[in-house]
Amino acid sequence: MSAAPPAHQPRVTLRLLQVVATVTALAALAQPVLAGGYLSGAFDFLGYHELTGHLLTGLILLQVIAAGTYMWPGRGGASPLLLSIAQFLAAGAQVGMGYSRNLAVHIPLGVFVVLLSVAICVWTYRPAARLPRRRARGTT
Image 1 (tube, one colour):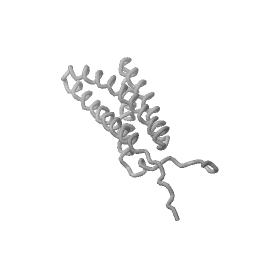
Image 2: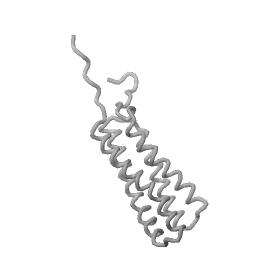
Image 3: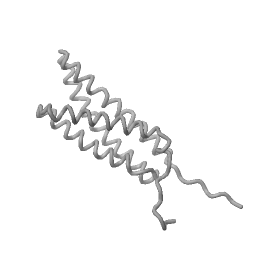
Image 4: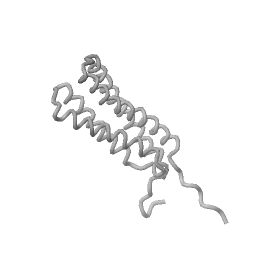
């Protein structure tokens, strides 16, 4: 009587995704603080907000790559990759709306990017993130 071999679980790739998602969420959470500093009269904060926006876009791109490695070689689910791609597109639009001073879109889109960043980060620490992707029926 032999035991079934353990299912391959995403471990290293999940840890990578956790690190990148955590740093991304922290950068996203800094953005409203920096914008608030600017609105409170600390005009240098607008430059910090701009710099952090570009940094955040780069971090989200790294998160897309980390989510891709989590999904493909790590055999994790596709949700983090799909959400990270949506987040990257939203962040790109967010930067464009900021430069065009279209605050009616920039602010709500910023709220979306921050919420999505935090949601992805929190998900990576949940037990479900450690589960391998389900196999399609009829495959070995």
